[in-house]
Length: 194
Image 1 (tube, one colour):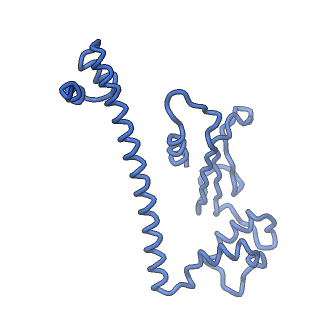
Image 2 (cartoon, helix red, strand yellow; image 1 turned 45 degrees about the vertical axis):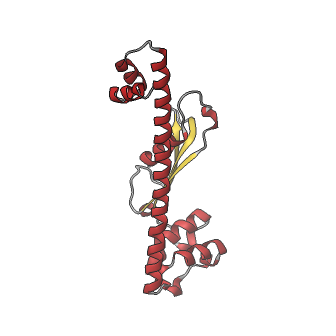
Image 3 (cartoon, one colour; image 1 turned 180 degrees about the horizontal axis):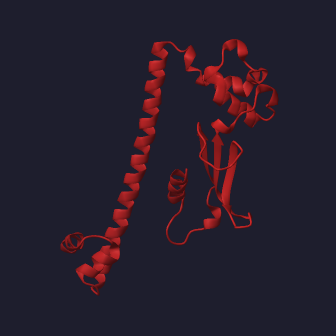
């Protein structure tokens, strides 16, 4: 959770003059089959806090649901969170005659119908798997494009900076390369382009 949240954090922070007060909130949500936290409750919301429990920063929020700790029975379920967690934990083991009444609530009915692949034929399941894989590949392709665009922009900035330093004539090729973060061959190639 920390890895993914901090990776996302690094994509929204910029170098230089930047208004850190306007960072978007990041929520890392983990729904886990097993227990990982030393807490007793199945649902944990965590932010950066001081040693006396005061919130220092709520820009990053970690929300964890540990299904193994959820032990409520149908008659004890009160909140929408309880309903959702109960559904996630038990849906795959429930016979159609054992549905709790709250599974008729519209929001849960839609979620169950969308996720219930047991009703699909083998062809529908195969199509679902293909669409899911295609969507994942599309997301990865978009991430690659964004990364390439950032790298290209970074190279353009380094090239322009190195050219400006060369034109001043105050630094050696080695000093320019070290300052800009490129190789000396890169700087020499720029100086021979003139």
